[in-house]
Length: 334
Ligand code: ZN
Image 1 (cartoon, rainbow, N blue to C red):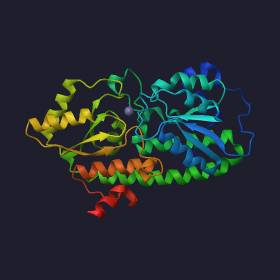
Image 2: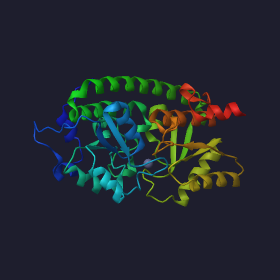
Image 3: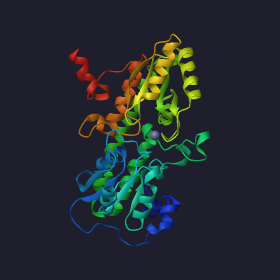
Image 4: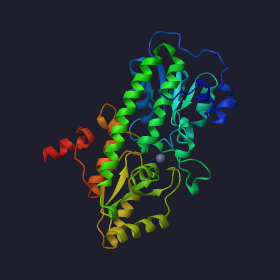
């Protein structure tokens, strides 16, 4: 495993958090004293799943944002703040994804360890779109390879909190990284099976730039990087023209964003004589329902890749990488 000194994890935290005084003196222990599982709070489902995978039964993860919740707009409730204050440690995605929770995270950082899982991703792997004013695109989980860098980061952080379980965390991290490598290969394969001229992914907001870069598919969103921005009529018209010109067969809605902009594209294309269908619902910034395969990171990405490939004329099994997708049952029932 890549050695990452515990101190560097903290150094990678946003300056605001450090300024708030969460940096600890060398040698100061943060190890939990109790023998029971570590109480961890995670913001998004993707982060919660990552901590669960690496932590196993040594952690008890409380996830703040459930299925269908938009992290760009989510504000911590009074209950969330209490949950966070009761936790042994807090994990969040970072890169300004949880824009409205920043103050809460800074406040909590004064009294307990707070980790941004994306902060250890090599900067060269981050996308910095022209219109983002120098901020990296936060949607890194869409590139399975880049997201894998967070696995070690979480193992290091948990080991810092529970040194006695470090070996187990390292082992689980390695096994999970191997599974992600398999997922990465699957996504690459099915996206590549879409005919080149149809390899264009149109969605509600710019959540898929990393997906596009990693798996070589052109990606366009109606809204920008954050769902806070309004979709302009001009953008809608641009995309309609592109759909018509490219004869794109499908566009996609996102589970955490209103479908109205995507419907506007479908209607716009229809008024110009081109039928484009909604190819399915993708999980962009939130995973599927808790307790389902789509409610895990692997299931979410498997669902996205399989849905996109099939709707755009590629070759992917309805059940996805391992036959676990809900689509397999629907297909069988037909
Ligand atoms: Zn987003």
